[in-house]
Amino acid sequence: MSRFHWSMHVVCATAATFLAAVLIYTVMTLPSEPAGLARLVEDFMNVSGVEHPVTAVLLNFRGYDTWLELGVLLVAVLGMLLFQRQNDLRQIVRMPAAEPVLDWLIRLIAPMMALVSGYLLWMGKYSSGGAFQAGVVLGAACVLLWLSGHPSLESLSGRVFRFLLTVGFSVFMIAGALFMLSKQPFLTYPVATAGHWILLIETAATFSIAVTVAALIMGLQPTYSETEDQP
Amino acid sequence: MTMFLAYAVTGMIVFAIGLYGVVIARHLLRKIIALNIMAGGVFLFLISIAARNSQAFPDPVPQAMLLTGVVVALSATAFAIALARRIYTVTGSATLSDGER
Image (cartoon, rainbow over all chains, first blue to last red):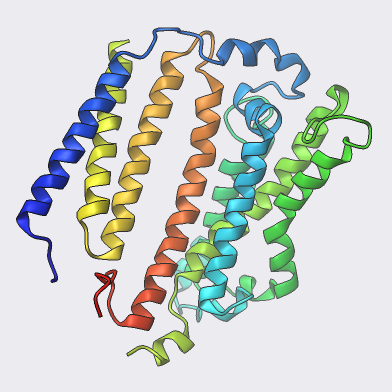
């Protein structure tokens, strides 16, 4: 059977409509408590080490979420590399395209993207920005280099690649566990140096996110071994 | 408040459409796209509730959840596509079997 019977469509559509109705009713009858957790965050901003509430929540108040999310990224990229039977980005580097204009444009854009990424990382302390935005911009720069066949990715050895993949997760874990020695709970930093620790973690996370995003996109490219054993 | 409702209700509808797609789609790529549509609905809801709970600043907790969620959705999608392609390479079909041989 290649397609569902029409009655299946009707049943599913009815169920989905019912679910939508229930969800909409729930949303409409949400208690109109206006504060949420915003006030709680505001009260503890002075011990967070940063000035932007979103960064404070991400890296300090709800550090578990962010730490384990870096773990999710790591697991995703490991799974992907397993399927592709690779442990390196060099095996998926493209041949350079013989286009002088593209080459010139990449030379112009790629350093700018690295600069924007660094700026976004630094801005996380004061305003919207931080490791995720910076990492994605840097990852996009890597993808751009790869698409244009720029040879720079070939100089990234397997060891450096694997180090960059894991550095965000491990630095976050080490920084979180370090202050357990002074009887603090996991992922709690001392108030005086919290800002520095957050910057350190965010810098490591930026590189990890960039390499992860780039590897996930590049890893989707069919490899030679795969095209051979296709039925 | 009405702004919040407009976005939140839209988010819920988008979520339900995505769920319908996940169940009904046969091709794995369609299922993955439908999952992303579901995620889009949740993201829309989270960001609208952040705006609703704003005092001086929109509630940072849903914003932070959204920020991590977007990156997780991206990586999960890429992994799912890799899985789907592996299934295609091994079985020669991009749909899940019905459980009958």
